[in-house]
Length: 148
Image 1 (cartoon, rainbow, N blue to C red):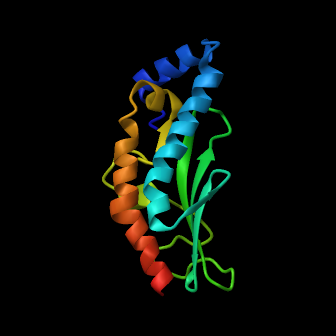
Image 2: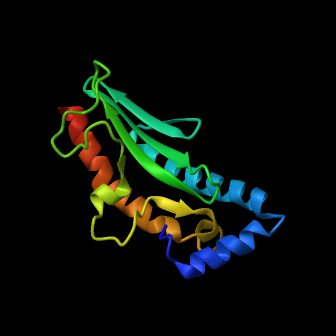
Image 3: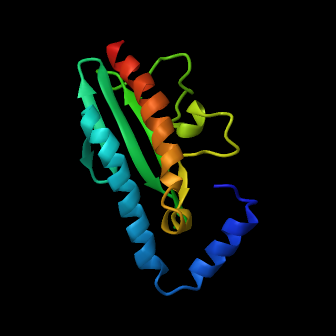
């Protein structure tokens, strides 16, 4: 989500004054979770709360849908821990940080995994880019960490 996107800012303002927005926000969050579930479950990920996880002898990976504290969006966050419970020691993994989809699409103007609820409501196709990057780039990369 681009903080300088005037159209998004206007739609957020309209949503803030819409008594139906809290329910629509929950619908958008559920739609994002359902879309993630449709691509992650076939890959062996199990949903608990808003986190999909997969465990192998090589470690545990997680794809977490994290709500922003302001209630306007949610972000897809990736995590990996070794069997010892340590963070990944992969050279491309930022120290003491989770990864976002932006790590896998640096050419994008903003993190494609940060999904504004008003965008998901108004344009459900918003999820397409995030799901494409997740399935074609991020998940194979996480799978390689499982293989060690």
